[in-house]
Each structure stands twice: as structure tokens, then as C-alpha cells.
Length: 277
Image (cartoon, rainbow, N blue to C red; front, side, top):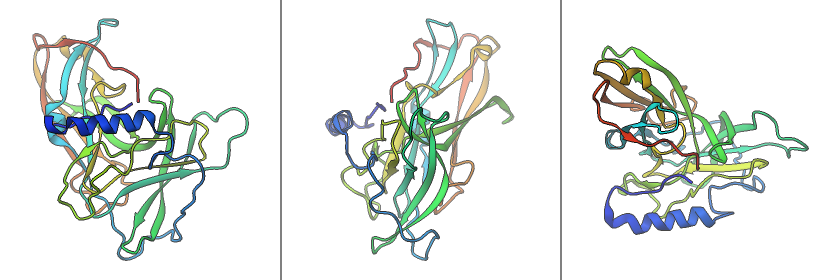
């Protein structure tokens, strides 16, 4: 599963409760499965729709990045965590649905994705936002294109190819409990693990944050070549919804990043990513 944690020690017990819920839940909110029982009646954004505001977590990126050397391959990996905060007025809710799959699963195993924007009266608007894909390594459904990672040089030129990352959206940790509409308990506890699902429901509530920990597969750049060169400064850039498919309050706060030093003599630890979810 995703690593669930809080930055403050007193909240650790709450994190364990979330982890336990994830490990044992089969029908928890946000996990999908079954049928689309509460479809939205509107396919356009009506006035008054409560939009999310997705913001990458700059402090998490600064705190949670490290250079590893994989003992199996000898590769140097620049690993980093990524967080998406929802600081908007509305929930970031994504659903997907499709007809039942007969026979072998399609490859890629996908279904159309839709964003639900809620109103104060409880009604919702539903609009297409791309694709949900079943992730064979993480063993659950992801919303494609939620985050883009880049490694840039000192002149902000691309050093490593873009990595477009899909997320299983969930309420992992509190981002801002003072926001109107903040639910005190996580409303989205995980993502559907069933590759044959016909309906998937995921999201990040107001004032909550989804986190992909640096230990997870895909949360790194291979920097073997850079660690064998003289030391230099590089910039890890993270952008939420680079394709602009999500309907948000504000698209101007979607990018963050931190500077790191790579090269000969830079300290590193031994380790590597794990699959998991």
C-alpha cells in the first residue's frame, strides 16, 4: 500500500488507523467496485460548482529526497516523495466506469475517467478528464497524468526525460484543517484493487493531501551518469495536472521544485524502490 504517515509524531496513531483501514477494507469509500449508483445529472459545469485546487507539496519534496545506490544493479537513484494537496472549495473526485470485461483483460487495462464537481445542494456535474489505468506494479487503479516530474540543470534545461505519473487519489494526511468543508476523517481510503472493475471512485477531500512516498516504484530518476560527473546543481520539478485536464480553481500554483547537488563525492545510501501500492 501507499506509505501513510504524518509529519508530526503525535499524529502517528491516527496514521496507523488509516493504514489498518486500507489493509482491511474491501468496500471503503473511494475504493469503487460495484455499480455507479449515484450518477451526476449534469455533464456541464454549472454556476456554483465547488472546484478543487491541487497544489504540489514543496516542503515534502524538500524533506523527502535522497540519493540511493541500488545494491543489485549499481545504479544511482535520486528518489523523492510527491504530495498533492487539495486547498480548494471542493473535493477532487474522479470516477471511471465501463461495461463488464468478458474474457482476457484489455492491454492497456483502462476505462474513461470523469471528474465530479459538487454543489452546495449535493448535486454534481460530471465531465471527462482522461483515463483511469490499472497499474500492474501498484495493483490498483490510477488517474493518468496527475503529476509530471522533471530533472533540470542549473539553466533549467531538461536533463532527464519527463515522467508523467498517474496517482491513486486518496486522503493520506491533513493539509489544512481550517478550510471550509474539511472532513475530520478521510473520505477516500484507497483505490480499487480489482483489475476487472467496471466502476472506480477515488479522490482527495478538501484540506487533505495525497502522497506518493519516495520508496515507491517510479518515484525516482536514474542519475548514475550524473553521479559520475563533477558536482553540479540540479532542479527537481513537480507539476500537478500539466495537461490541464482537471477543472480547478487555480492553475497558477501547480508547479514546485527543489535544488539538489549530484556528482562525485555526494553522499548516498544503499537501497532501492519497492513495488507495493
